[in-house]
Every structure is written in structure tokens, then in C-alpha cells.
Image 1 (cartoon, one colour):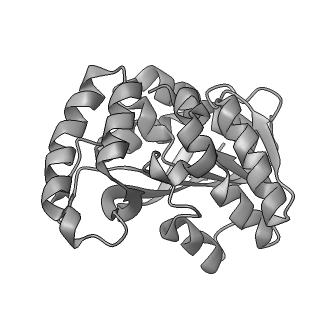
Image 2: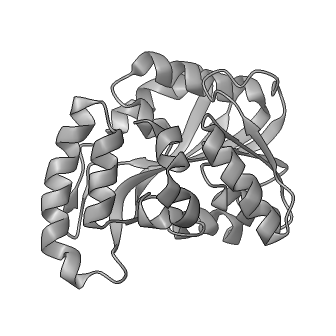
Length: 241
């Protein structure tokens, strides 16, 4: 998917939540729980920050936060969002699979729907989690929320399997402390599906969207403000050396 084109579109710049399904206008409830449970500590990395909602939320709670993304348009908007919120976040344009210049810096990493974009690409998955290992301190915590394969109110995805995490994370210096299911809120309308179809170049993702669109048409009348709960994995891991 061409994320930068999606974030840079005129519609997205003025009202991102109308075209970007994962943008619900603020932090995801499942991510906010990390703060409520006291799971974050020290220097925090928001990996794949997008429009910066999670990084901004962490900063509003007193954390020192760096948000990275490969999309210049996303970083531009994230900076504006932080200014509007009146908080300080170090937003950087960076490649998450290398994280050059961030060696040994972070105590906590939050990956909210980035790792699953490397689905079916084990080489990139390995490079990414190894980069996270290099960018963190010994004993650092990693929290991931990614597409799953569960059925949530009729919504199913061909997302990651448990083995995707079990094979990659331990081999790259991460001990999995928890691997379970959760949900993630997305905003879907016919316009969203049309926008995504125009941006997705991977045939596999196009095929994955077709049954989702059919399911959405069935449950859409029951949704409040077109927000649907998606099947996701929640992974908690600790850096080991």
C-alpha cells in the first residue's frame, strides 16, 4: 500500500478518519490500556506512528516519546496534531527496518499495526525486529497489535498466525511473555474501501479486502459511526541478550 499517497490526499489532510480506516481520530482503546496498566516505562518508541495519535497520547501522560514513520505526509500531520494537542513529541522520518541513529535508546516500543504490513515477508519481519532489538536497552518491553485470524462479530481476516510471532521474535532476541487475541477499531465506509482499493498494489491484500467488504455490507446498519471491531493479536515481549 502507498501509505504516503493515502496520507497526502486532499481528503486525508482535511479529515483523515473519513478515508483511513485505522484513524479513529485518537488513540486505540487497546493501546490506551497500556498506560492505564502502567505498562510503559522510560523512553518510548511509537513505531509506525502514522498521524501520531498514540505518541501524542503517551506524551500527554508524561512519557518521553519518539514517533517514527516512513511517510513524510504522515509525519507532517503528526507534528501538526501534536502542536494542536499542546504536547512535545519527537517525530522522525525513519525506516523502521533499520532504525539508524537510534541504537540503544528506548525502554518501551509500541507497534500498533505496523508489523502486519510485512505479512508473508519473513526477511523484512526479521530485519524489523532485529532493528528494534538494536534500538532498545536491555530488558526493554515490546507491545504489538496486529491483524489476526479470529472471527469478531462476523469479521474475519487472513492476518498473521501465532507462528509468525513465535518464529520471528525469539530468534531476534525477544522473549514472548504474552500472545493472545484482542480487537482494534477501524472506520469503514464505501468511500474507505474505494480509497484503499486505489492505493493497494499487492494482489493478496486486494483479495483479503473483498470478503471484508462483503461482511461490512451486512453489518454496516448495526454499526455506530461506521466503526467496526477488527480481529487482532496482542503480543507482549521482553528484550533478552
